[in-house]
Image (cartoon, rainbow, N blue to C red):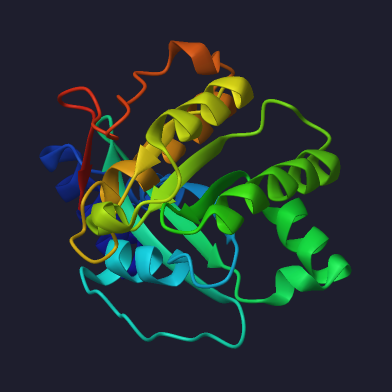
Length: 228
C-alpha cells in the first residue's frame, strides 16, 4: 500500500516537474537578506553647543531647545546614501568627555566624528583643537573621518567666530566644514551625510579626496543623498 502511494506521488511530481526533496533543499539554502552597513558616529564638542539638538533634529525633525542630557545617548537610523541603504549609529556624548577613560572608550568605538562648536562662542571653537588631538591620539590615525561643524548659524547677528577662521582651521585639518542650525534645520542632514560618505569611502578603501565634498555652506552636490 505504502509503495503504491509513494509511486503515485513520485509520478505526479515528475509530471509537474517538481521534486519535494529538491524544493526542501532549495528552501533551506536561501540566505537571509544582507544587513545594511553600520556606520558609528560620535558627537563631540563643548557643552551647550548643540550636539544633542543636532542629533535630535536629524533623528526626529524636532528642535529641543532645553534638552540637558546627563548621560550619553545612542540613536540609530536608516538612510539611503548614493543609492545604498545604510544604518547610522549616533553616540551623543553628554559631559562624560570630562572623564578621560570614558572619553577614550567613546573615541575608540567611533568610526567617524562630528566635532561641533557654536559660532557665537569662541571658547567652544578653541576647544575643537583639543578634541581633534584627543581623537587622533586614541585612534592613532590622521585620516579618520571627521567633520568640523559650526552650529547656531541662525544667530548670525551674534557671531563671534569669523567664517574665514573656521574655513582656515578645516583647511589645515584637511576636513570638510559645514555650518548648521539645529533650530532651523539648515544643513543638518548634509552634515551627517557628508560624514557618512567619508566613512563609507574609507570602508571601501577609497581616497577621501575623491569625495564630492560640500561647499562652505554645507551643500552637497546633486543626487548624493536622501533620508529614508
